Length: 304
Ligand code: TA6
Image (cartoon, rainbow, N blue to C red):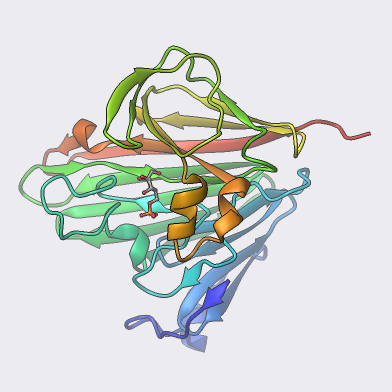
């Protein structure tokens, strides 16, 4: 992991801060980079790491599972203003390019800045972390539940006096043993927009398999299952409040062009994202809220 020193703007982890933010026993605050808090979780059900920057789940592994469930690039950069490559980037309040202003950052601004901590709590089943973020009329709250399953729920509230659009994605990078050996079930018969090359509307026939770049926006509210024969497991991705599921693997050429991903890194992950694509953006009246969520769990085959 590439670390770069940077004091977060106005955020100083001082003893007073630590006192004010006393953590439940299973959560420890670390600073892999000065001023860049990462919450290390060691709970009876799972281990995890969550960065305050982007309210970003970096890693998660249930204790009954042999391998990490989320992929985190070994070349991920921990610096304010740069989204972490891997884990679950919170793409908000728009998905991909801004619908009207190309000068604005792709996938919104929330994944590239520090959020505020809300309530952290723990019980026998899971650790729950809440983070908030506000910009203009947009207010976001992310609720994370980390246990034998992972739940991420993003609620947007319009705190302004004019309607605002909201779209985005919970952009989950799922760890795989070998991208060429996996397949994804749950999209058979679904229409999708294929955005590799000239955008084209297509329909899924059978499982999704990978032998080249895949970048698709599926029209579905349903769940999907990632079948991984190399790691002997099936990862189920459920969701709510999201009319689109994005499936992405950059393959060879795009991976080589990403400075925070090893050239061979494309072999080790696939993204399955609960999304609201821009053309399906939700229009929030003043005071109105909308939430969407993803829930990830793992069934591992018994190994003899
Ligand atoms: O996952 C869908 C997608 O929009 C892809 O087109 C690709 O750009 C990916 O997100 C990663 O985007 P990023 O800005 O994180 O490099």
